[in-house]
Image (tube, each protein chain N blue to C red):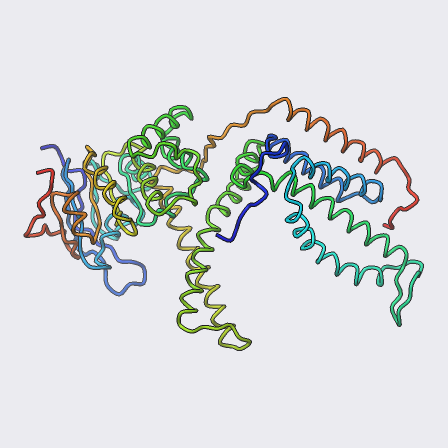
Length: 259
Length: 228
């Protein structure tokens, strides 16, 4: 199995917290930090995210690897945004000029993205997907959302398995990926075959559900127990978020990004 | 003897786009307490027959009676599915819930049982199949044999009066196959098994039938069933 959830296993405080509280905090945190326009809030968010990370005690090496993956996308922003953003020019290289506002803006985006990713790793990645599905069900989010998540997760392994089998079948008949039409066509067949098979499987799964009396309703057996530490976590987090919100709304800033 | 569990009269069924029908004027009867093996070459309609009984496919012509009542509409079949269990060939098609206990409780919950009752039934069924301790296992992480046994538990948890098994031994190792044989031998309900494995059928059914286009013909030579 190549798809794994390395962060979901652990015994840290963040792992033991009620997933519902973590989902609520993560959602509010993400929205607040995403819409923040000031460095104070972005930095505050980053600090808060690092606190969450400390609570989760995740293996730092793996966290850094994931952050690098995210920041590889942000790297492209650094290539483009400072040079295209209107404002006062602070640095010139040939025909390209970087603006102060552009640099500030890109820095803000970088800070915000990292803060959100770290918080999600600490709060959401520490919940096994299965529990996550049950928790969003318990939070009274739309059933469809919850079932989509659980079914996707349940069958992604089956599809991965199917993909591997097909790929092996191609390889043992001497297939080597090259840059030619044959390769593209073969991959297209592979993708199409996976699609057709998943459609077939969806049909059979539905039939099997019908045979067991399915009539459109799912029942969840999972019950969560809300403990004192969950209340403390939720309260403290909400307080911290409230402070950030006040910062964002009330305080004018020296380093305000444009827009 | 009471009335037949299943009666199929003059059934005609062709898959959409297929040149020839699978069944033409097909007739079949299953009596209570019967343990029947369905055999025949690939594509002769064994699985199709099971799907017709469950209402997953609808015949183009003919009458199907289950427990003495004619079934026609989806509503009729909803009733049928409460009393007839079908074990799919591929366990991955059958197990879709995150954890084993939820999957086994899915059927009883659909039958209107309360959560507590459903969990109780699920646990009892699992205990019966020797699956204690599997409750919180994640379904996709089970081995092939475990998946098959859990699938069987999900069907048996609905306390069916008739069980249909579609090639239950595919991909099973020797030990699991033996477990399955013992489980079936202990069952008190009628069942039909589609299988290519002669040895397995010898241990589990009294009679084998060849599925043909128009009938199910009992084999001349009967396997020496252990149930007499």
